[in-house]
Length: 634
Image (cartoon, rainbow, N blue to C red):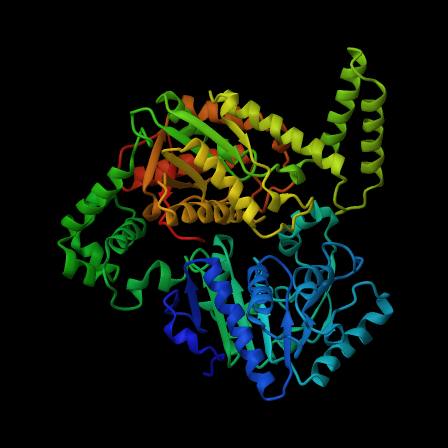
């Protein structure tokens, strides 16, 4: 099998091949490492072909997956002189019926996120037209395929992957030889992009896409998958047989494809999750813990009930031979897991702690019980709300508040004209706003005020002092749309100033990288960048714990601290979550999980406690889990 030109890959220490997959797959520890590699691979191909006087014909998707790769390409162009004038670009898909200047259109997205920043000539960029009359679509699609062939065929296609395995908009059961066409979007696809359109009901039902035949005719293919929420479909794509239910699995039939994964996306592949089933491994403590806990799940036994036959029956002979007998291994892992249980995660001597909350409700949803415990232990607890969360408020809530303030001011004779006029402006703007259209600045400010007041009420409910709440309103988030700016120096500086001012002994950071909006990941990126800069200046770094809760929970083998919660703790945590009234009953961006956020939190906290009980540890009512930051960027 041939490979993409990239001499540096041979010496890369950040990528590791994943065993047991049906196509070459490589895992990267961080998204930045993955994107750096992908961008340099593209750059190498462009330079190689340009040196031969040839153009490079590339097919590109829109969306969050390739975004950091595009940003690295832009950096290479601006700072290292990468010349992209020989690139011919074909967009892979487009929503049908959506105006071309809509912020959700793939044409607008690619223009904004890539084309406006590099030197690809406009006449070498091709987009599918989603505004054609139905009678013109078939001819347009045929000519699009002809344009690709006229350009010499696709040299490289970069792909993301949908939760249902779609590539481009080739949905489940797409035909292997399909060409560019109009297709109906799968409900899973529409649900997955609902946040981009401010509600699933606003997502187009159809789209234009380059077909499977067109994608598979590319000489080289690069598939990118990022995040825990892609882990299941990555397994279906790379380890299971080719199946038209998972269109991405057709890539197994291509002669030159490479799959780039971050660690969360690869986490369920056998080569990552159970490498001992694929051959000999080096048994580190982490791998011993993972394998033994996996064995508990396979056998249904508690740790201290495992015997040698269990290890042998589940292909753990090597572990037994080098680190046995079984009782010694089980006791060792039992002690490790027992040591994770900590009623006092910041210790019992007074300290200063700081919880970073990406959205205004992540603090109480994900670690509300631990905050209660920290406050009970007399620690000085601070909470930093990193973004306003204003795009996640329904229009009717903004209107209600505007009208409430107008009525309040009129009732008490504070102001009648100005607040009344503002309420009328809000009513008019909401009435005239088209589906998916960004809000005006005044409405965004009102929605931000709603989230801020809810966050303050929730924090006070668990005993936190109002003076210890910090609303950072990081600049990267202030776009008024789902698409955010990259983390910039100003974001990192705001975080640095807070850390230098407070000098916390311990901080908590959202490590829930399955957040479908990406805000958790971006916020963690900014915090880690600030910490690394402080470390480089030899400034003291606080103890850093990572939490999850709103989207995923840590698997047992990754948990390093588990804080027990009583029924009273969980009840108070629920009460504080309820203070976020704009997010209750029905949140604007709930993701694919139909449960409310308080239900997700309680189910996960109780589920973690149940998992501890099943392996033979003390039975708790609920547990909140944490891992420690390893000191690297994400």
